[in-house]
Length: 450
Image (tube, rainbow, N blue to C red):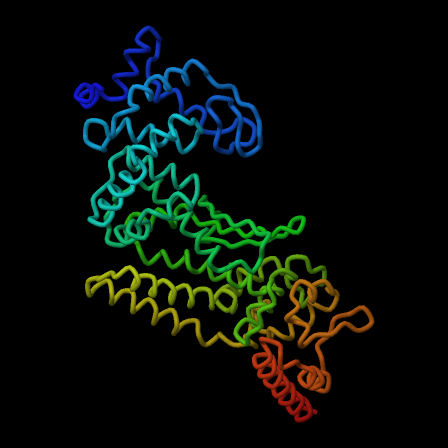
């Protein structure tokens, strides 16, 4: 066993001894071309057979390169490696190759030498101390983030955010973005908490037209739910460069996802109902063929953004969750930062909370109309809305093929027929009582006007 010799020579140097006659003798620059399957873009590809473990497609592989790699690894059979300045780059490159490709001898080498554990300890130590990762370490973390959260769960990714909030850029912006995407998807998984089995959760970062800082979308295809959060690349760039308050956008969009999943799984709360109504109005306004008040509903959402409960609540709760996250990170901001955060929260609540109620007044051609009145007009010919949003059945009914609001007597019947075994019995009972009281007041006002 040539331990002393192997300690001096790097993997790259040993490999050059075997390939000095080749035009390009760098194995480590050749292997990564097998990172992605040519058919599906997935990983991992078996380097010996070329078979993709995701779709089964047989990719073209260089058996000669694999043979040479096996020869090198065979020479290291009885040697134990520790990451150090001399071998760090090459060992980390080999580890990276092993994450994208399958090769039995390489996997055995990585496991035997505990490369993953050493790498994790080294990177976590740097993150905890706020020390910038080396380019190779940054590349490793980026690649693991691209693979998914399962590979990142042993890394202190919250520490990366903590350092960013403290204006320490210990990873590249490219890596920060990928890690952030993994964080968002993991938060989405926690929000779902297994409630919907067939669900696909994704997060992407891209340029968004207009002033939007992010979006949360939902669609269902062949019985599979697709939930996606898109974050503005410009907004994420601001966060990376020190504007940490912009991180509220992340929790804002996560709150939208929570609403989407709550609605889909039949959750009922008095706070959720106004948001459901705003969401339905937005959807129906985009497909509405009626010309109500001569208004172009394409601009409804833009005109009323600051008055829509769906957005107001997302911003308020996004702020609350963000503050909670900062406290969980144990951050100690200086007095100026605390004052800025406190002022922003107070200004926001002062500006927007007056509109936070179930009968807020959206603008229609510079006039106002109550949300419930607008919903009554839009939902009339949309029976499918009651199926998509079953919570609305508590106050709407289909009659002669049309959807209409229930009258006081019908609401009373609904209230009295509630089952006490319903997990939302108390919420529904309270909501119906409030709704009935409001309708009684409206009746009194109508009679007084006559």
